[in-house]
Length: 270
Image (cartoon, rainbow, N blue to C red; front, side, top):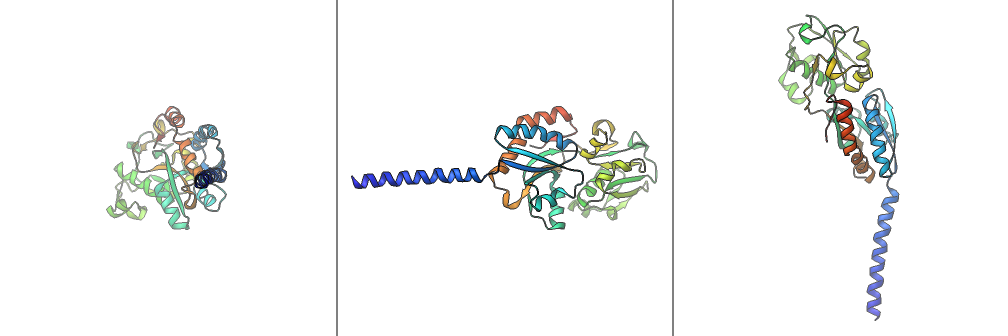
């Protein structure tokens, strides 16, 4: 009798410990998150993400940035819980250059890069000696140069192409003698009057009233290695709230919104 009672007591204690551990884990999980996004389409998409997340009891506070150099610094310092604005090559470069320890936890969208112009309607009209704007950050600048090479306008050193490290110094042929002008990504739309064409990231293009499908004179193929992602500090990558955030973004509701709203200018990467 004593042995039976003892076994039952031990079983109840084990059950209580399990429930307590579960409740403690739930209590420690965040239910309010600050997420950094870039101005434009990132804001639009996260309005839908917020609604989906709210059904799971997750309150998302969106913080909007208009400079690509700021969201990772804010995340690394603890001002944000996560951000969703960048692709893997950009994150890799920022981690290396600025000493961040930020990791991806889920994919979001692919935003094909385009070159835009207020002076020509077709890339066939590009004159010799044209001023061509590209981004001055390493990952997006490399991306713009690769797109110029794909369009047959320049040739880059094979090693730079292989390593995704191309800069204007890696241009080996430039038959049109294009003048490559490296500017901050946010400044490129404002510089279109001074440039013949400029590479403009999708969020900045949208803010400037430019459409990839209607206005770009060169554009990336729909499939590219530049899928954007949700990123967090390494210490948070396995936290339950991080998984809940990714699940909200990668929901059928968000996917349908992206496909319907952006009609191919943004593509779900999940």
